[in-house]
Image (cartoon, rainbow, N blue to C red; front, side, top):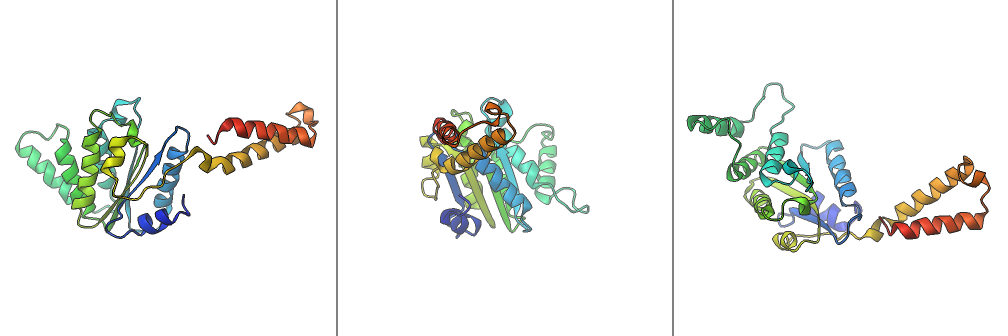
Length: 235
């Protein structure tokens, strides 16, 4: 995926019309979360002024499937600065002061406030990348709120704001981002890595005499590897 023309050309250095890259997968186990973590790590380790905010969705946890919680977490990451002189960014101070006047400073940001604050924060940095893993894990009854908020941020930001997301092939998600490029993941995409993993570990087990006391004919070794790789189905 990292060598993909779509990823390298249209997401890492995108033209204005290519600010979103979606990685859909038809089946579980296609490696969505692994790729998301690799993409996030690549941005965190890159010596660039690009600001990164990321989130791993999970339908089993309330605060990881709720659009408001997800947006608030993205905001918390974007307001963090490395400068000791700048503890809080101006947009955060302004919204706090506005809410203080209304006596609402202790209440959570509304969805609208969150998306507008995200736009203001992305305007501070030359480039901002938002990575979200497993969009399909967001509560399907209200995830349109998150999808529309992400599109709003991308479209309204004065500076370059990019969105990288992984998801299953859910129609509502794909329709929201149908005009943007996507790389469809298949379980077979990682079959080479799995085969290598199996072969390396079988050889290690034989060498360490943990498999059949180390007495394994080459044809049996090959048969064991083939059986394990076949049953993995790329997962």
